[in-house]
Image (cartoon, rainbow, N blue to C red; front, side, top):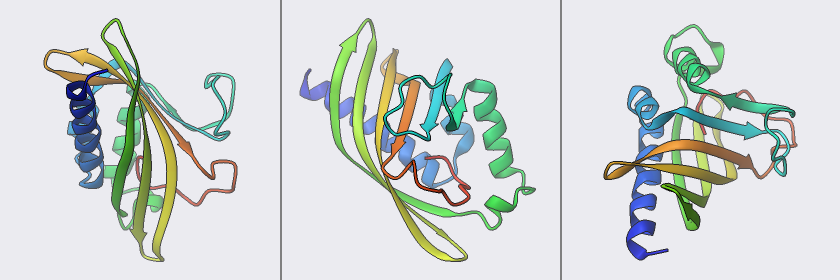
Length: 158
């Protein structure tokens, strides 16, 4: 691992987080590879996402539908739209093979809606696919620290 790779990956994660906080969902969708997978498992230790329960297990079509729900104005869980601020830290490159960089980070997300501010912490693992001078998201797994506790309605993307 090089410092340059760590800086590139960190900048990509920060950009993705900023897009989500600003609800730039079209640009966020463009960050993904066509075969990309966005997962928020119910069990924070789960690795078999296709044979287990998940809060989200989104391929390209499901990501587009999730964005439509968040921006369509018809979902009670996003009315009013929540305001979020996320802090991404402890970025670590854990692997690099055949143009895919595996990165882990910590995320603290604060969400404000009509009933006040709530925070959630997560370990996040990314598989970043080299795409020209940058990356595409090939996989993002958000392991909420309290995933196995009852969750409130989620009107945002982690």
